Length: 137
Image (cartoon, rainbow, N blue to C red; front, side, top):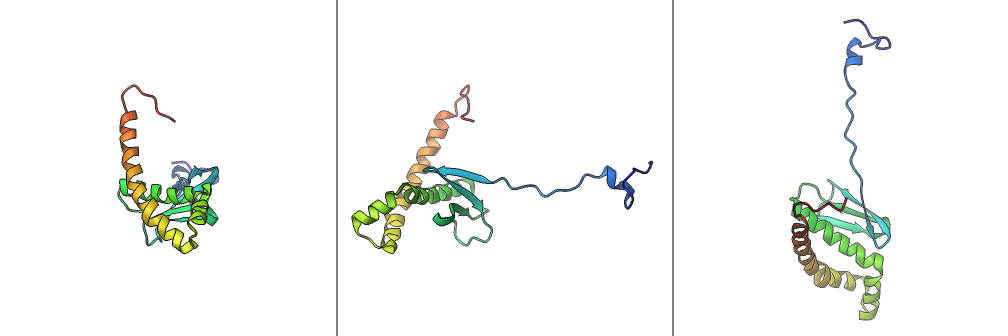
């Protein structure tokens, strides 16, 4: 094999492709006009968390697909309540402290709504996954 010009230190360098780390795709969702990023965080100790001040939702890796979807939907509901102002309005109406509101929101709104919405979305996806129908993309 003839030497390749410019490959002075390693004649085989010109025939090898540089190995690159695959770039992680960044995921953004619109929540009431605010852009939230969904991040898979291997350091997360819980299934998910929503940081309103940074518009970030963190999800623990390694969960089954539908558990991940459940967690993302759960955290998106927190984001929706915050970004839409519904949470603030309800907290004022109910005259609750922030701590009382967060517990109420989690126990009586978000947790019961998440599986109900997820099962509804699953059935809607099935209903729209019919042969011959174009995808939304």
